[in-house]
Image (cartoon, rainbow, N blue to C red; front, side):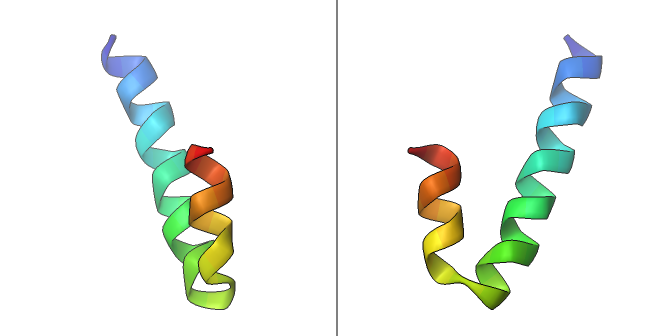
Length: 31
């Protein structure tokens, strides 16, 4: 479970970075 959480955290961090450039990216990430 911890491994999955770390992978998800990495994806979330990438999504946040994308959000800085494109606010719609984070919505696409969770959609």
